[in-house]
Structure formats: C-alpha cells, structure tokens
Length: 602
Image 1 (cartoon, rainbow, N blue to C red):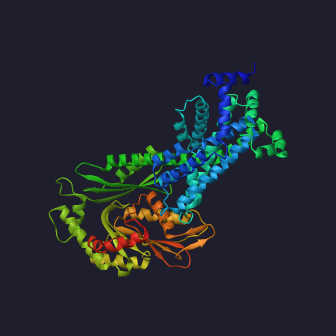
Image 2: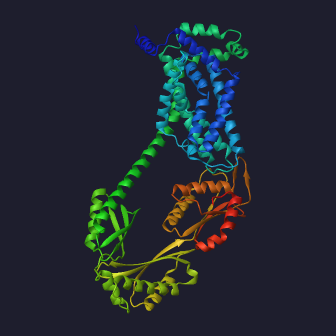
C-alpha cells in the first residue's frame, strides 16, 4: 500500500469521512458558489454594512456580529476545493463569485463611509492596518479549522461554524479597505489604511485557500469515483449552465487541462503565499524591534528610579521630586531634581553614574538639579549658610531666608526682562558645585518667544541682574519656540511628512513639559482643494494632527484648529500662555461656539 493511501485512509478514519460525505460536501460547495444565489448576496451586503459601522463606531461586538453573518467563506472554500481536485468549472465559479463578492463588499463599505457625517480612524480600523506574520499563522490555523468545520457540517455537526466564522475574519479587512477608499478626501493616510487592510485580507485569503486545499487533498476529495459522480451531477440541466457548456468546447478548457496539474496549481498558490509572506515577515521584525526597545526603555527607567531613590532620597535631608531620561550622544542622560537641605557632592553623583552604568551596561550621565528643601529641625544647612551671606535681612528661619532671596531675584528679573523678548514661563534658583568645589548659585530662566535671545541681549541682561543683586548667579537660558512650521501639505501625499511628524513630536513634548501652554493649529489653504482622486480639508488635518498628538499622550480638550485663506496648503503650530481662569470663563461661550461650528473638541 502506498504511503499516500495510508495517510488518506488514516485521515478519513479519524475525521469519519466516507464517500457519501465527500459527495455531499462537494455538491454543497458547488451550489454555494453559484452566482444566482440571492440569500448569499443579501447576507454579504448586510455583513458589509454591519462590519463598516462596527469599525467606524469602534465596537468589537458589532464587528464580531458581521463575521457571523458573512457568507464569504463559501467561495474561498470552493476555490480551495477546485485547486485540490482540479475542477476547472468549480474554479471558474468560485473565483468569479469571490471577485464579485469582494467588489460588492468594497462598494457597500465605501459608499457607506462616504455617506457618514464623520470620518475617524478608530482603534478597530487601525488594528487591521498593520498585519504581520502572526496574522498569517492565525489565518492558516483558521483555514484548517474552517475546512474541518465544512466537512463536519455535512454530517449536521455545526457547533464549530460560529467560532470558525469569527476566526477567519474576512469581511472586516475588506471594510477597512472600503473605509480608506471612502475617506480619501478627509483622511491623509487613506492609502496606508486601505493598503494595510488589503494585505490582511490577502493573507487571510491565501492562507485559507492553501489550508483548505491541503485538507481536501488529505481526505481524498479528488478521488476518481467521487469526481465521476460529481461530473454526472454537474451535467444535470439545472446545474450545467450554457457558459460552462461553451467553455468545455473552447480552447480554454484544453489549455487548462495541460497546465492544471496538481503540481502546477500548488506552485501558483505558493507564489501568492510568498508574495504576502515577505511583507508580513518584515512587519513582524519591526514589531519585535519596537517591543525590545520598549522593554529596554522600561528597564532603564526602573534602574534609574531605583538607584536615584536609594542615593538621593535621604530621610530628613532630601527628597527626589522628578526623574527624566533622554538619549545622549553616548548612552543615556538622567535629569533628576531633588529638594534638599544639603548639596550632594561630586563623589555621590559619580556613585549614581557608576552604579546605573554598571547595571544597564550603558554609559549614564547625570544632571542633578538641587533645589532648596527644609526638612527636620536643622537650621544650619548649605542653603541657609549661603543665602545668609547674600541677603541683607537675616531671617532666623532658613526657609524664610530663601524666600526673601527668591523674591528679590524674581522682582529683578520681572523688572529687567525685555518687553520684546517673549513671555517668561518659569524661573528656578538652585546651587551647584563647580569643578573647583565651590558652591555657586544657578538661575534657570525659561521663556516663550518667536526666536531665541541673541548673545548681546543675554550679555546685557546678565550684567543688569548682577548689578541689581548682591551676588552674581550663573544664568542658564531655555528658549521655548512659540511657533513650529510652516509645514507644506501636498495633495498627492497619503501620510504626514517626516518633518511634520518631527515637529508634532517636539510640539507634544513642550506641551507635556509646560502645562500652562495651550496649542493653536493653523491650517492655511483655499477653502477646498480638489485634485483627481484626492482632496484636503480642515477635517482631514484635524484627524491626522489629533491622532499624532494623542499618540504622544496629549489630550485634545483645549487645542483649537483655525482655518485661514492661503495660496497653498500648509500647517503651522503655535503656542501661547493659557489665559487666567476668569478670562477663560468670559470667552468660554464664544470659543465653544466656534469649535462647534467646525466640529472640533471642546
């Protein structure tokens, strides 16, 4: 007995498949692929509409309901059976049905999205735009389950069919493509969305066809006596169409008989398999790299926090207030702010760098900002000793001494700050130990302006501050740009440009660091840009910018998008200091009315 025959008999025995089951599965699959099947098309249209609305509403339950309604598994199984048995007529029927089904689903979802009053890329949509190799593996397993469920359904065992319908998930990816096509006038990433959904559907389709072909071959669906019986059944007048009769007499049939061997069919299918395999593998590699980078980042944060708390959080002496990290030219830079009544010396700071570098196997540099802290009952601290020498009014309380000094510096800065130099965002005073071991005061000034102060303006301001105080603090400047851009928007582009993404990342970082700022986004363009197959609008800009800012952790409860007439489309990001609450209440009604008119968040 041949090895292949043993496998066939073993598989048939365990799956309880006999000739009657094979004939029933074959004939029901042929009937299911017939185009004149009104219930099939009604179910497909309903499934497409349900899936599209579920995706737009971000409802997993609705999307699952569409999977249960969808009949799209039938022509795909028919394609797999045709490839397994070499049935040319079934293949023509199944592929024609499949192509028409895909077109119907795309048409329904695209039209429905175009009619919707809003277009927003929800999580349910985005989750189906970045498939990877794991999705292909899931599709292969789903195809196996679907093929076995199809065989079992011929015996009245249908318990696995609902789960299989959910697992194969064929209609939602198609509706994602439809969403991308239907929102191309409003969604800058419409092509990326459509392409991602198309890749996921192609992976599901190829995997299910491949696995169903393998299962049908395994159980002997193409055995000669089964094919003969099916051929006789297919030639009945109610089954054999005039088109099929014409095809049988044409040269197409004779050509397909020559090239339609099992080996040729398998090679063609594997070509399609590898066409989706390689991009999915590349996507998985990117996902793995992102996960490793995220894991490494979390480990760095954990180690730096742990060492900082152990070294700089001393009872009745100091307290760690804030810890930040940023990449450096070589390794990592840790920025730690502590409130302390004594200065940490160079040896203590070096101990932090050595311990963290050893544990992370990376070079860690430390920037330690030490602010005055008053803990316990100790009166003589590094701060009180320094400020007692620099203040004319000697206060008994060291905290009061520091307050007097800070008020004096703040008054001098406010009086001497140039009017055209922008708005002051913050002022911090702390002590540092210089390389010579001397304790020196450092004044850190943060300001919002269109441009940085030039060297001459900084020198004049520094001299004025030194003259107004009884000591000469080092001054460190931090300029926060009030505008980013403009960034050009090209109608033919489908995604945000790299300069625009980098600008939004910087924009978001500033907003997180300075909560007193509020953003305004200016969209300058003609009222409507219409080009072949492409358009831009303020709604499209809002969706893209909001998605990018939300990915950076910026809530969109206060930002405003303003349209301006312009010659060419461009985007400009602006920052301003948030108005006091009493002024906000005064203008609240006006701002809300403006946002409502434009469909923007309040």
